Image 1: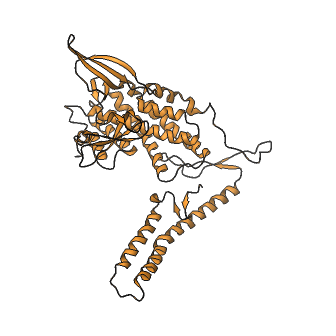
Image 2: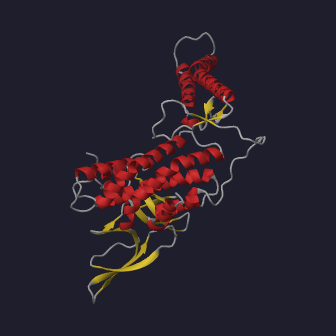
Image 3: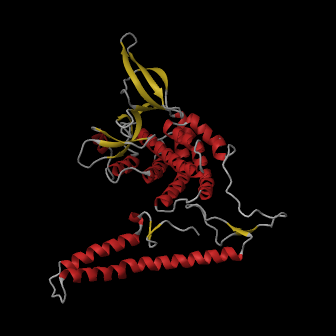
Length: 412
């Protein structure tokens, strides 16, 4: 059983995620305030009465529960150690990834003793170029054919040097995939004349004006996409709807793994990280296979749009935001309707569909260059919105974008 990072051996690190630390802090503040402001007669000086009461109540209702929790954990650690010593030639199956079905009983596998003596210590296996993450055909295809936010994060995964880096990059790739599919669906549903599909848009709107968009926002949005596609099959192309339905459970499992990490259960060693990567890899690859419908709806970033008097149409130069290369390939089009410059569009079968306000092409003061960004959150009473860079996570303020987001359908 893996020990946790602790503070003063009683509280889990980081402190702001530990209920026992919050209970102790609450007892210190509330006891000092209640006793210090009391008008009851005292038999000792007020400062001494307050100090003794604070120490006593904090020890009873704050420190003591944390100590009891530590005592229970130590008993579990001793039990686990005794079980390991009692079965030195057995390896116990790891706990399943959250979101998969657990076995009814612990599984033990007998390992035959080798014919030659084992070395005194065995170092963990070193990762080489044969690592399946590096050579995965599914990941390599995703780098070449999917929208840039997904392809870039998959590239970072395949180029990670250590299992720990691979683990973090895998969760980032999963979140970017969920985000990309969710905002693509939202853009397709956010078209004039479409009354249905407001459930997805209202879910995003309430996330933007609330705590801000995060991994859970995108997976909940994908569940809403499945619901809308079931009720109104004509809203989205059939490959899009079936692909989302095929990937949503995998992305939800990877979101649960991200929550597991965020709540203090991070892998503490390289071998444990390698195990987590092996457990999560199948979910990511299956989701990427299901996302191949995105190849038929490429993202375009408009570089220029000029009206041609002779042909009476618009000459458009657009950057094809596909693949992991940071410089997008330029393509030219002749369209009958104008499009906005420095804005993202979907090249959908029914025509050009704007990705605003979900995705923007915005200048980043920190990077000193224009970045592909996604909407993150909106202040309740201000017109601007905060967007985040896909590549570096920098937060950028975009004027007037908040009004456009607040114009999305609200929850019914």
